[in-house]
Length: 330
Image 1 (cartoon, rainbow, N blue to C red):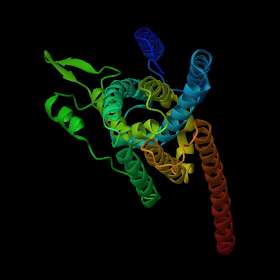
Image 2: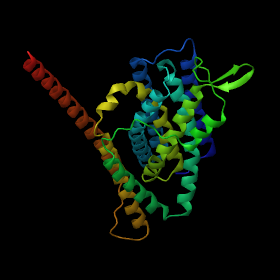
Image 3: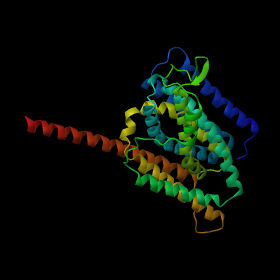
Image 4: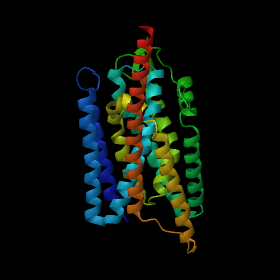
């Protein structure tokens, strides 16, 4: 799909306007905790924006680019849910006040979006010039899928600080405590950053690390840089509100890693098969985009439903054990 330069500027400009409006709403008046009602509204708003964008693609470019966008968006959004566990750990580790968490996520993810844009541009150029990278991406996704299954159920109470975060904490003079919602303050005539900026850097750079598997995954669905970027952008824009909407539900999605592993493995095999097909191997199949979209959607539905059923069953068993113990004591 050939996208004119003005379309890139129009989409990026539109996204920046929406994000600026979002940030203005967060910053106006006194900081306050993000409610479930607000989170639900904004999640619905950003999902609706993604659907409208996909429909526009369908109208102007046909069903294939639109299908690629929806498959990529669903993949990125699904993989991003796993990020929320780590975001929660970071917020807890830095003891971020709840009234400031939305601003932290907004700025942190905006930083991640800029860095992902650079990553996507490099990836698209590399794939256009080095076809063998499709095999590398495919094998990497299969390896990541295996690692997800092997790590299922392990507690991740600590998040290793990446190089950028360590550098920021070492080089930037910072206050020990939060100063409201400010990221830069003057202390005895010296400008210092607050822990709020450090957390934003932590969120942004940690999300970029997650992009190491999500970006190759979406390149397995389409090599169009415009679709890859917009799918990532819409997924990240709705991620903040999803953090507040899901809340305790995150702990109940016990089979999430299995679902994500299956999706990554499927896309990895798809990448290798299509690379073989392009190289002239006749028996290697081409997987249509509608099949990819169906596999991703069905996998996430099954994963979510199975997780919630298990969580409900565990609650019933726990209550039953508590009742039995109380009866024995009586």
